[in-house]
Amino acid sequence: MMISFFEEFPNDSCLKKLDLIDFDTKIYLGARSFKEFNGYKRKIKNKHVKEIIYWPILLEEQGYWFSPWVKSKYVEQIFKELKNEPVMIDLELPKNRKLMILESFNFFKNRFLLRKLIKEYHGDKYTAEYFSGRNFVSSLMQFFGINMSPNKYGNKIIKMIYRSIWSISDQEFKKVLEYGKILYKDSFLVGLGCIDLGINANESLLSEWELGRDLRICMEVGIREVIIFRLNGLNYLYKKEIKKISL
Image (tube, rainbow, N blue to C red; front, top):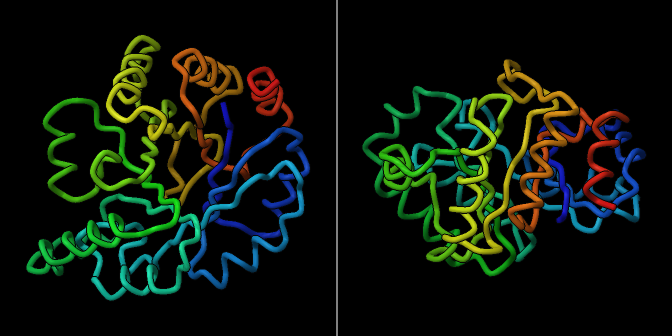
């Protein structure tokens, strides 16, 4: 099982955490532009980092994450600068909630374009999505255009099942993983966390034991890749749990 990392706020300090990594990994690197992404990418010299994936992040007033409430021009701009490079599109409700009103009249047009661009993109494409279970919420996420099936769009789906935020039992967690594997096979990836704060700065964090627990369950189910949020939180205690799985 590949154990990878999200990094939402790359800088020289957090990239020093790569010195702790002596196991094969991938990094999903947040950046405001492809040029900025490449600047950070060139700084990563660790031979164990097998792939670095561009995670485009918008300005907060533009929505920050991607959804049908983001103006089409910002979505088109991101895809225009790509040349079939691996990319991860973070599908979440806009951080600037006012956009859900301001862009309501453009919702269906924006949703059509976002779906079209992802479906037609020829490079490796990942979508990070909310954990929503198998209920009405899941159907709502599909309608909102922030849930995209790999069977239809050719993406790899990263379900952000952050148990430091979502209080679910081991049994429920395992069932969700097994269901995802049945639906999407190896295109079903899992986001684990959190081991550091994100843009909202209010996330609870996993203990090292809890991270180890989640990694073991993912491995038992046969998940192909997990992505931990986020690299900056990596320390020797978390690494110890990761090494138990990656050996």
